[in-house]
Length: 194
Image (cartoon, rainbow, N blue to C red; front, side, top):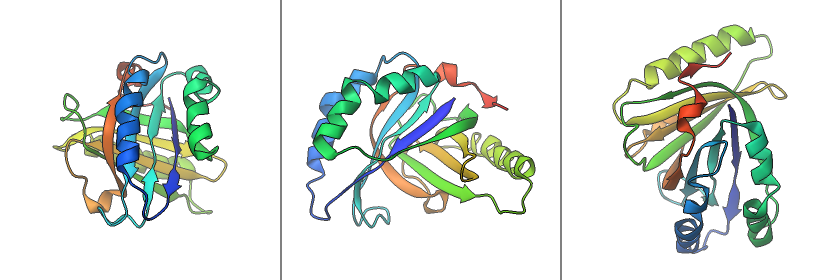
């Protein structure tokens, strides 16, 4: 599994209905994209859920890294580049994924939180502790699914969780989910991936 996200920050007075319409028309195009585990079409709106910015920031979990490459080099992403410029694409090696009690519902929110490993920390110990936290989180009412991933270049963990309804403030930066494409959720695994 690979996790991936890019964020397009928009002007403070940007009409976010433009993004909503874009997702409504283009979101279903990835509903059957081979190799995609899931894509949560997320936005943040300035002044909503503590967001200081307007932002389109979809989050992906890929079951197949070749599919991720196919997407980034294909027509769909070319449209993003054409309309907004080429964004920085962050990606992480997947460590854990599990569905939660609300997996059968359409999530309305996701959270993303990053955690930099201390220079003197034992990475395996920190990761094992984080996996334990996600195992517990996956049993929480309202959780659709949760994932943990690692960027070993910066020794950074990313914690990603989809929520049935509003996400708790303590879980990280909160995003509204406008659409969920999840053609390969079953291919993402159901637990620790290392």
